Image (cartoon, rainbow, N blue to C red):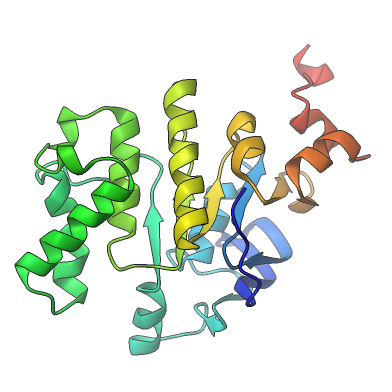
Length: 258
């Protein structure tokens, strides 16, 4: 598990309602992500996990409520204040979303070119450091199509770290990976959290990965339109009295599916 830095919350979610138009996916969400924590959002398909994540980092606007990132309200911030918050974290989308026309080094330096005044040599040096952190330095000149799916995910994490964020948001990082590659990615996430103190907020439904890396989870439920569990995933697996939580963590087939 990660080494927790107890200097205060990285993210505070207050009375958040997630949805679009008149459709509510989740409502009245309240939770805190602590600094240095590996925090996982989980739940059944279609419950709104990825939508919640996108509300947390400002891609979507919530229907109600607030999201505070290191004390700054991204939900209400505008202009330069919003831009400052947006550059304080990094995002890895589900498919990695690397630019196929750029090699790995150029993918990582892209945001540095836009948001810093560094020289090309400085940007290349920092980008190589990021690639080295995820074990991809020997592949800096490779195109995304020339590397495996697991390597693409790690390259996307390196790009998300381009501006030295304290928080990384990862959407289904293990999706489409075989168990060994997924375990390697889990190890990379743990090392970055432990060694650099990065806070991770991860959407996942991969139980093996969740048990391996999560300090804390919240479980969303489509029927309840909200959170039904919060805590250590192994404790929830072993002690929860909620049949929905027990079923999910113990991989019990529903009667309807039998």
